[in-house]
Image: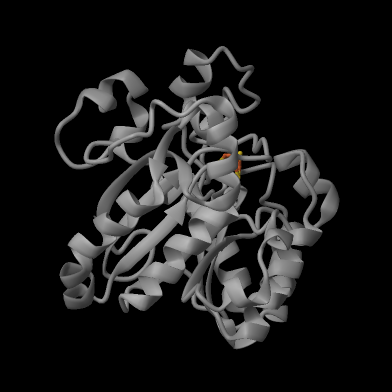
Length: 290
Ligand code: SF4
């Protein structure tokens, strides 16, 4: 997902390190169903009784409003060139966590969420890879009166029913490119599912914060930005603002550690002038831009 905001210090460490942590974050505080065999795990995954989680943390005003518990789910079908968290790509690299344990954790922070107008955010990896788990947690959160936020590319939006969309208060929707060719180059996936999911969110009245990662030479052309803006216009008043996230290299060590060829090895982030140009482009379409 939009790892440019959500990459946390603990995510930049090796999993063995954060598993030993006893402080907040990583996967501390969850009992893992280690004893389940493969078949039981698959059954529990499909039913949403367990979810595979990379890590979680508590943050403020990053992954949605107020103080939030952000849960980074494992597994992603895209292969974005600028991914900051390739360690979230494989679901099996996550730790299985019981649904009840997750719901109890939210319950424990419920008062904090209400005081700060915060809530629970699912991010990733791709939060939609495990729809049963995420939607059951969201249902439980709504029953507790807790605000829900889904950080997603929308690529797997077809996994969600209209009823499940109703439990999403806010979607951080990554519009990674404005045309299919650039989208495929950036992600290896297709753009249309993101557009389709955004339209469904807008129809349901769900609030959207669009996220667009600005990579000079890859996503930065005026034409591409114009196309992203036009897609956002389709979502109408649901779009509260657009985050223009400048590319950075904080995730590069993870590509090296995993010995995955990193296509943006020498890529620079956007200059202030480029960021201003793109911001103005979105603003010219009437959007608030951060
Ligand atoms: S590859 Fe997946 S986790 Fe990485 S940026 Fe793309 S959508 Fe996000």
